[in-house]
Amino acid sequence: MAQIDRSIWQDKSVLVVDDYQAVRKTIKELFATFGLKVTEAENGVKALERLNAAKFDLIVSDLVMAEMDGFELTETVKSNPKFRAIPLVILSTHADNKYIFRALRLGADDYLIKPPSAEMVTIVLARVFNHEWQ
Image 1 (cartoon, rainbow, N blue to C red):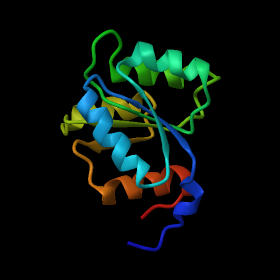
Image 2 (image 1 turned 180 degrees about the horizontal axis):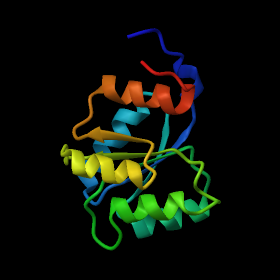
Image 3 (image 1 turned 30 degrees about the vertical axis):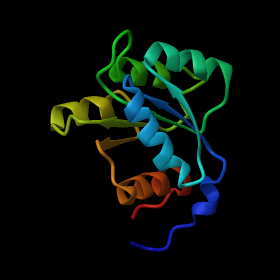
């Protein structure tokens, strides 16, 4: 993998949306190693509340959640002019193409399979923040 300038990511704010607290904690710890500030939400409804209250540079969302799932959140975020420019990455256990293609069709900017490796997170962050393809 080519050298990536991680300084671009310093202090970027990420909204992590997942219904399992343990997953949010793990993702928060992983993203913190990249210098990112993480805010958590347990579902899409809570995520929209957080989005209306603060500015975020990235949204990372699970797919399967109660109240509002990741597909609905993606569609809502990407159809709202206020939020549409925020990159949104799906992070899911579903590795089936039908889930991946649906998420991308709804506007997701990328798709990671749980549990994500630090290398895959690096590649996605470089694409999202540095606009580099690795």
